[in-house]
Image (cartoon, rainbow, N blue to C red; front, side, top):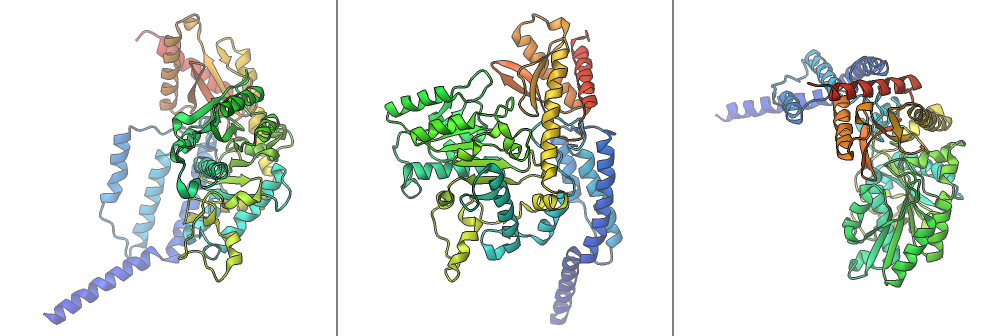
Length: 510
């Protein structure tokens, strides 16, 4: 009995070790890597030529069921089944590609999520395969160096003197806004990190069209979403500096503690850039922290043609800038900057002796875990670093200019079409508009708004184009973000035609 048990145990251990070695095989990685490169190359070629659907729509429950099937199948992935593994890998990748959202199709002009520079994914893959992580310098020395080198260059493009500012990468603009506003809270209230916010009568002043992450941050930080005061806007949906000044005077008279003013460069609905120089002057006069959500528009700093949109950005206290938007990187790679380097450790005031080594106190300056909510943080800047090193900084200016320019072209096309109405003159690549066919001229607003919602849903389900919707001053609208640099005027003309056809189908008698 003992010998049989020993034999069974040894056989089990051998099989287990074989399976583990198969999964970690460098040769398998090489073979599947070649396979993946071929599949992605063929896929992107077809997508860039619009040979399929932009959005591969499927009902949620159907897709969940379909995604679960491969998880329940019995597989043979041992050391003698590499052919089976390769074939299965090819099938799984095809499944992913055939059901995914094709952002590299020039007809994708929807959310503020770009068609990323494809080779950036290879640099990200190096970090993923080797699991380069960051929290303390010794865990990810090269990842830290890459991040710091990019922070230095982007900070200088903002206009700050070398070594006067600080910055880091975090997982997305929402987390970036939270961290920047947490720093503002701690600076404004002094001991809030240690003692809590208490009854401080605190408020956060935010751009009327600020991203929802700003209100969410107020809830997380203990300020409370009901204590978010919306700053008045001007006719261009920009924060109005004069009325901001009046608002801050009023809040002071009410003995309210203003944690920060949160402005936008640019705001999501129509891409409005706040007049930062004037707003900064107001905030400095009132000694209030100025935070800027430049997740989308920060990259305009790299464009000689559009840098004026961020005039005064060097005067803000904190700034969020997403490389996974207008620097065309895969998600997520978001930068948080502080104009004053001394503020870099104000967000998190705590010790973690199992991480931070007292025998090397000088290295704490390079420990990213001291500045971000993340402990284990992926090397999120590898894609940007590799792309910049391959193509140079000029590429990012090209990408901004090409897409911002096309936003203006689309505005002119809408203005020239009698059945379309642009709702603003765009400052960037975000354009909101309405389609009002002759049959709906003079129709009640409720009917027209419902028509626009139904039209968009029909359009995206068809796979012909992908656009989104928004609401401005109670009016339902269509909205595009031209965030694929391969999109052309011809694609936009076809979009207008597709919208007209879809509208006619909706209005025709069934």
